[in-house]
Structure formats: C-alpha cells, structure tokens
Amino acid sequence: MEQITTRKAQLSDLGILLSFEQGIIEAERPFDPTIKEGEVHYYDLAKMIAASNVEVIVAELNGEVIGSGYARVEDSKIYLKHSRHAYLGFMYVKPAHRGKGVNNKVIEALKQWSILQNITEFRLDVYNDNLPAIKAYEKAGFKGHMLEMRMGLGE
Image (tube, rainbow, N blue to C red; front, top):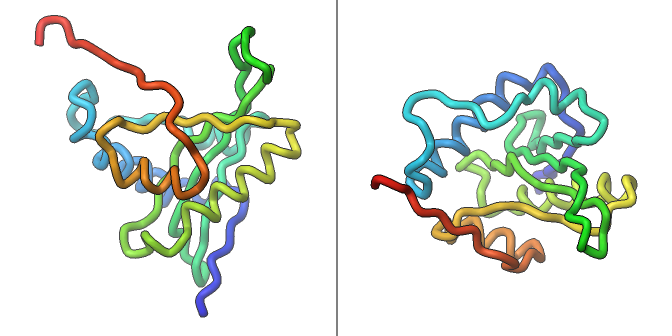
C-alpha cells in the first residue's frame, strides 16, 4: 500500500507550489467573476514558507509532492472566545491523487502544528457553489458558519 506523508514545505518546493497555486486559481475562476484574467497570484509562497506564524505543508507519495495547504495564525475578533485562530488556505491535491485522503493528511498536520501554537480554532473560506470542496471540508470535520455575500455595482 502506498504511504502518503506530510512535511513542512521548503524553498526547493517553490516550483511545484507555484503550479498548485495556478491550479487553485483555475479551479476557483468559475465561482468568482472578480478574479483578474491571466496569471495572478494569491500568495507570496517564499515569504510564507519562511514566516514563523505560517506553516506550509506538502503531502508526498513516493517522493512526489502531490498536495499542499497552510495554516496562518491570525488575531481573532475581540468579541470571540478565542483570541487567535489558524486560517487555512492553499489546499490543493493533484487531480490524479484526489479521493485518497491527501487533504485530510494535510489538515491533520496543520492541526498538530496549530495545537503547538496554542490555537483552538480553525477557519477557512470556500466558495458557496464549490460543492466538492465543501464536501471535502465537511468530511474533515468543518461546519458551515457564515456566508459572505457580494454584489457587483455596475454588473
């Protein structure tokens, strides 16, 4: 049986991580008409890999990087019970490896890192119409919490 492992991302992973970022953006374009055309970037991955308040994780199978995700420690709103939370993002699994539990392995690694940072809450954003992603996050234990809405003026 193939063993999927996780580890902290390194700068040497930057090439594959940049391709994952473009995969995320292309997957999200149908859900978000406000994303610019052409190549765009959501993240400064090199800076995130080096940051002390961010953990970028990669999943590997037989030495091949097949998935990613990050947790970033953020201050929470002052009225919440928790003063800080971990915001998750950059969740990506290569299409050939989807359905193998890669996302759950990445989330588990991020959970363990977050616990070491004394974090008790995970947060993430997902497009309302992105049902496969919602299903994957629910399978990992997430629950819908708040729906952000938008209206384009002049559309």
